[in-house]
Length: 115
Image (tube, rainbow, N blue to C red; front, side, top):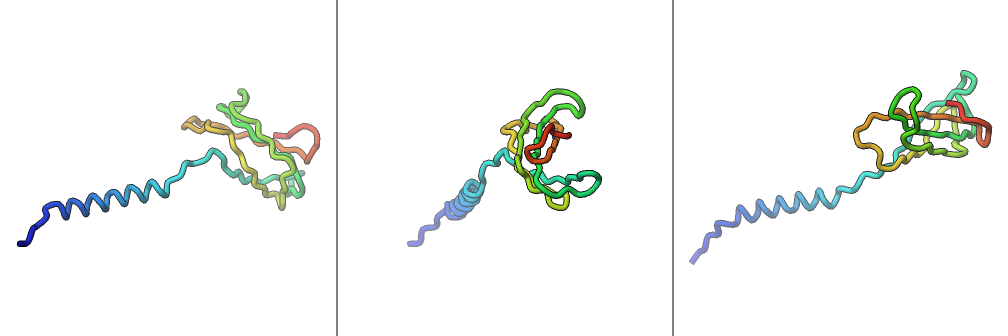
């Protein structure tokens, strides 16, 4: 006697769905708060070369205002032909609010920062 299963198609569909969901869960990781900032720095009108201290801060307005997050200082950043890359991590502040990033530099160990 041959028994026909009415759940075969449904069972296969559910199994495929569970595998697809499990695949998404296994490959999804939390996004961190750090990011890399790449910039270009000129010194006296020419591309800068050397090491510089680079400071970054977040503001909620484009001029004036107070620091919302930071400042973060990256010391002795190598600048080559005017180009540099620094890691920035302001924590969990990015919630859709518009921020303005202020970058300031000085020669390594030098005096005041220049915005």
